[in-house]
Structure formats: structure tokens, C-alpha cells
Image (cartoon, rainbow, N blue to C red):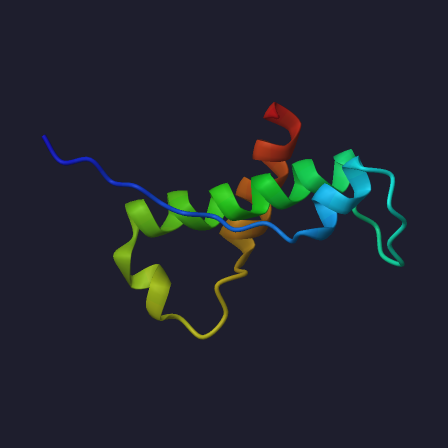
Length: 74
């Protein structure tokens, strides 16, 4: 059985926001959920279409739709 793993790194400013340390940008929970959905969409698209990694713009219409659906799910 093949196990595929992915590593997603998040901006440290999410941790600062959780500790109530002010940041100039939006790093609240809804933004965190959007970011998770965005990154999971990249992982899923790459798993199902290996050519996805080699396109010039990985933020295709499919990525946008999948991100929106994942955000609703999360």
C-alpha cells in the first residue's frame, strides 16, 4: 500500500493572533479556515492530476471551486 503525505506550512502570524499579539494583517479564524481549504485543494489537485504541478498558474478555476467547497465543508 502506498501512503502519500503532504506537508503544509502556515504563517507564524496565526500563532501570534491566537496569543492576542496584534498583527497588521488579517489572521483570524475564518482566514485560517480559508487558508487550510486553499492548501488542501492544491494537495488534492496534485494527487489527481500530476501535471497540475507544472502549470504556470496553479490557481485555476478548478482550484478556486474546490477551495470554496472545502471551505464550506470545514
